[in-house]
View 1 (cartoon, rainbow, N blue to C red):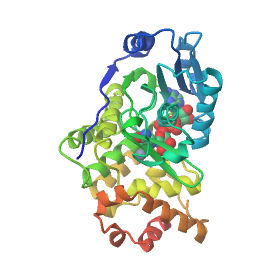
View 2: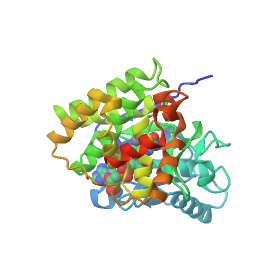
View 3: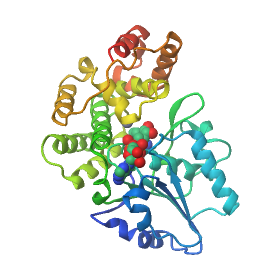
Length: 354
Ligand code: NAD
Ligand code: ZN
């Protein structure tokens, strides 16, 4: 049984951020209860943090996205902080404000407030037992689609893998295109390409269906328009939401499978890691890789080269096993016999070019 899932309600428009508190009160009309805001620490400098109007009982937690992508230990520590301050009282809602990193931290906190143990215990598919606290996404960087997917991607002690569950989907999203205008251009490019790559992989994969495909096509076109024609922030932001909606109902592919090793072992951030990998995948995604290269060139993006030159045999072994951990995505790309299409030697050959 395959159930299709979408984030059920969206507040959209320039300066919609100013309506956040009123929307929360409308959705969860219990002003005595507290709200948890998880905010990307960069918003101290963009001014967005200063525009938040928390009530005295609310908790504003910053996530240091400028320094790193989320770890299971970050989520556990923030959850523990909430419990230390509020005991067993649950918030009425958790609001994630930021890029994919901060939105994923907020998603994971919502789940970890109602499920015991460490977030590392839930990295995988459908391991979450109990519905989380309600949650609202407020993206300030477009591309991951985290505002619309089932995933909260975390790096744990042994792997980088998402908590993938119906309970790790947002209940609502506030899309304010003004919020993404402060993103530095390179970051805008790398995360925008994450959306592009999601859509290419999903469209080529067997996990795609007629309900997810139009979202992927629209999202892909939004990225091409943004980077090859005109920068329309509203379209770009909607494109990310559509890309996430498509992924929520399909699967990524071989680029993401290979990029997790680059991220986990070599420390590259998600969007850049995907670009490094996708640049070498013309044999799988021909025309789309050529379009990607045109966007790279047009925006004078310098992708790093020789990134794997110092990788040890032990590290390669781990990178291969991380790649195969994304089995669902590889099955969608190559079919159940994916190890024949992508044997370890082929993985090494591809990594060797990066
Ligand atoms: P990010 O959230 O890591 O942020 C990248 C940088 O942009 C940070 O320095 C951040 O502070 C800054 N930033 C964010 N908004 C800004 C703004 N408005 N102005 C200025 N700077 C701003 O980047 P990302 O690419 O959005 O997210 C990457 C993370 O998302 C990774 O952990 C990746 O694995 C995950 N991811 C999740 C999903 C999902 O479905 N949940 C999908 C893809 C990727
Ligand atoms: Zn991605």
